[in-house]
Image (cartoon, rainbow, N blue to C red; front, top):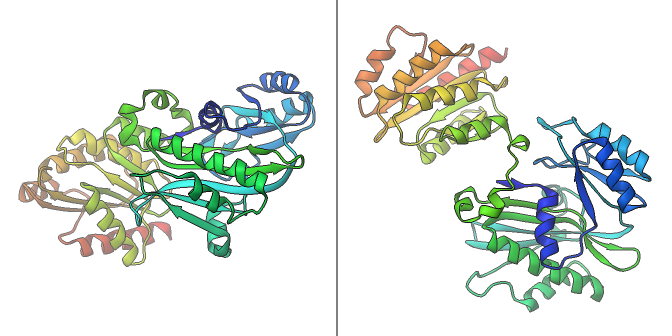
Length: 380
């Protein structure tokens, strides 16, 4: 789960970090009113759960309230990577002298939290890592002992030799760790953390992602969820009890079990294709899940073929087949579907699908290769 910038900043302010004043607006008139209250130059920032807001035109400076109203009018309703901007944060502008990146992730290699800092603030950290890796500095933290002040100071000194900035950055890193651990986060960022022309340190942006599996013990953060700013397909999938992640390929994958789903995606790429999604229907044999899964996949215009890869253990292949037949009857299916069903009641399932327009396959290799061939035909 992602929270908005203004929500993450609330958690920072509670812990004493300096954050430019600001309020959220849902109309241009509200933005104008907030700008009047703040006085001076403001920044109008789209509040959507995607990166690259600035490049997309979702972050604009305004010199006065009237200009803030106009900038808000231009941003509200804007489509940024498939999400519609429904609210903006109007915040004080600061005179930036230096920018830094501060982040904390859950690192699989070290099996714990890892800080990432860089003097290349304000840029996509992935781009910095790819083009200027020497500017990236990391610190793995042992959660048994936590982030110790001397470690954080040493890390800060790797990106700046200004004692005042080191002091402010050390505090910011400590706050990041506190929020990260107490909110069950998977990622937290300040980008950029800045030194202003008068020597002060400010956290002018914020990003926070929470582990969905921990939301049951994070009621306050769970209330921050904004479904309007999430991918509609992912929201629908959660409501249907499906695990779904949208990707950029053209082969829609419907699989049972996360491990098999990952193996299927790997095989699609091994044979030269690109999966359009990760979609795990889990161990349930409920045919309605298959219908919901099909509806979500078919909504993606990039999908040129659909691959069903089902291993029936707890999941019964005949129930999946029933759901698939029901889905093809209820939904307008315009792309070919390759089906591999193996395991519990596979013979019954195959008998049910005989005579349909579905393309059968026996092995994973065969199923993936057929799906790729059909996707290529559909794209041409």
